[in-house]
Image (cartoon, rainbow, N blue to C red):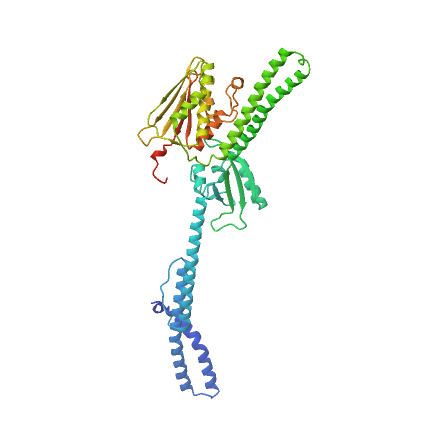
Length: 460
């Protein structure tokens, strides 16, 4: 027990400090004749012994309280106990309350810290916590995945090598205000990020003074660029035939007004341009309608064999124009597709029409439909032509709106530049995957892989 460890010297000093005033008082009273020396000495001795015992117990309680407080300061636990004196008991209870409240505060801090860690890791965007000297204190999972290394404890300039971000951080620290900066990170594929830099009013206990949050805006920038390109291309596609029509109208009003042969020729050309604009507007409306419903999967069931037969029959006239032979190889017993009949007809009509138009004259187009694997396999439909083929660098962009490999030839054959974009979005709405295989001089194969709805478990 602690009270047994009371140092003798400290106890004697305390007893001496208590006994000295009593001795002085009894000496004065004895000198004044108010009390006899013998009884005064005995009384002083008795009081001194009583004080010594009380001081002994009180000093033990104080030493125990001191040691408990030192143990708390080191983060340890104290042993519950009771003081020997009333003051000691009060001190013991106070220290135990202090320990309990300290433990509760520590538990709350640990819980808050763990919650902050989980919250940071749950954020989809990269977040870095920095010291005032731009050392990384903490990086969430998204930041580690982006940077590809453990950034904690390293200088930001060694982790994120971008002078614009460093300059913005210095400005934020100097002005003590938030800063925004957009920069491109040269990862294996260049990505554009918008960074928000926010200095804290007071540095945190771990040294965090600045929060750096990144948002990947690559897709948004690309979408904005594609939208701008789309508007520019659509305007150009419409403006060109309109300008042609305006020119012919002006000519028919003037020099060719009385020339019947020229008038008929010009009217035929005007009809072609008007038809081209009509197709363009129809394709634009069709694309807009498909995109509007792209997030909703069609619920009807469609039999593939009669649909493909109908597409082939509708394009028979075009195949005859180019002396192209269209053959079909449709596997028997194919399960129905989950889809929209009109959209699927448009999808396959666009693919077969392209195969006929851009394939070789007097060539062949082959349509195949089969199940990939066993009964649960996906359903594949491919359209193969014998055209000139497509260079590899063009393949990723073929489904972009208004993207053409040969603009003049596409317009000559009546293309709007939207056919494959429509195919891609219809396939996406049907949760299908479009793939393109082609080599220059080897023709092209356009394939669409549809999920087999008959293989899905009930209620899925």
